Image (cartoon, rainbow, N blue to C red; front, side):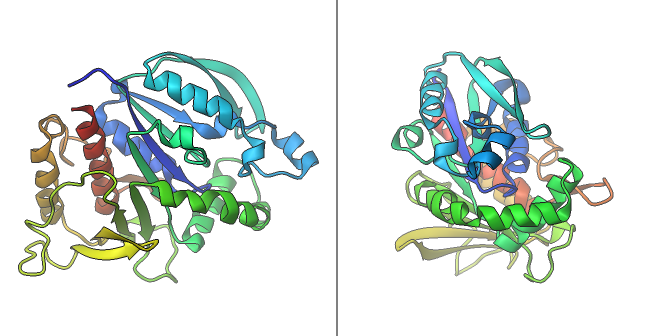
Length: 311
């Protein structure tokens, strides 16, 4: 394995699931091997200043994009940074933090692919694109329970931010190697039972994906209908689409694990739901811990790409 720092980008709108995805990937790689950076810390204005100026945190002008570029370049070169910290609870900035890059760096946030210099810094680029109705439900749940907002405030913020989401966040999906969408089988069912969520993974040919055709093919898919691989087009270009249903069982999941794990020996040391109990874990409404196999497989697939980049 070479010594370069491997950088993963996870971009998506507010409450798209970036942190949940990041936690499982870090678990596979080993927490001590991973540095996590949030680009939301690079806001130019605090909450009170944004309100006074009438600008949202999603707007590029509200963020120090040039500093993000500099810090990504430093991290890629294995050098330390002095990272700002934005406190979502207070809406103000805390003292900056001295960060040294570990073997793997995960960079998550709103605007991570918005400039060419940023995009060139990543080994793997992922974009999260849940249905907007589901993202809104997740944002209400998170901001009311963890950040002290009233539901009406969250809904109003979503309404106000929509033009910037459309103009600056969603266009970044075109730069991603993988586009991940978690969605309910029935779009009217947006409750807290996350075990029911399916996963739709658009795999672009910008990076080499694992060879899945041996078990996922039209002639004989012995994994059944719960896990499917197909060809389609996204933004006019040919792509593979891997679909994983929420009701996929453990036997099917482990069969798919084997393919990814066998291709990368290093991944084989960690690539197991049995060996990594945090994979796919989600906290339910009443605080109980649930496990989503679609989420777990998504985390493993992204980890596969990070490890391939390290060899």
